[in-house]
Amino acid sequence: MAYFRGEIRRCDHQIEWLDENGEKFKTYAAVRGPVETKIDYIQKHGISVDKPNLSLHILVPKNEKTMHQFKRYSKFYLQTANEPDKTICWRVEATDSISAKGILEFTAVEYYSNEQEDDVQAGLVGALIKPVEVPEVDKTTEIEGPIFIKPKVTETYMVKDENAAGEWFLGRTRAPVRIEPFTTPQGYPAVNVKWGGAYSGQFDLFFGNRENPQHQKTIVVESLF
Image (cartoon, rainbow, N blue to C red):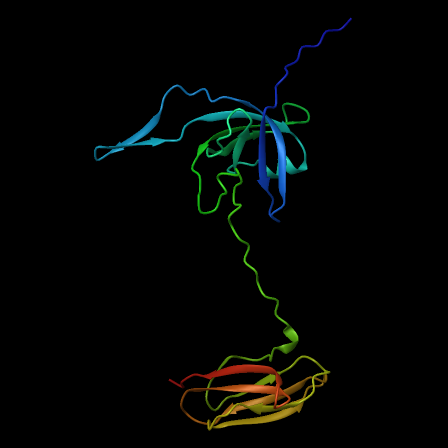
């Protein structure tokens, strides 16, 4: 007959978090602590400021999601049925994924809540951060070539699309600009541009239909000095 000794931990807490794609995940957790018996504080110029010093020892199931989330310095909020208040933020200090099979252990300390980025009431770190939507750029509409040029220097511009149709022309300007259209060996429409004056300026270069040109580029002429 064999006897085995073990420990049973009750998972009466939950932790929710958002991954980098904004998808929500949840795990049960067994929590022990806090065990601190005093308040840490600093005093300067007669003013005392308390420092967060509570700590927890937490066990969660070890899987791909929890291993990715609970790394050192990651933040989270505990959600407890007996204590509905979720306003305490915790930060992971150290993790142990080796000692117990199938279990991820880590130590977390009391940390500062960020009301501008975290949904404190829902207990989610970074839930208030809105992703920046970057508009897609249709590279086929770009005219390739330098934005800044020098007077008296010839520069080449092209549209890298052998199917592009139209003509090269300038916007309304009396600037001393000369253009010489040609076609590259690859079949791309191109143009040589030269600013004839000795002073700085700016103009717009177009390719396509004059009523509705599909390609445009603003060119700035820098001073010679």
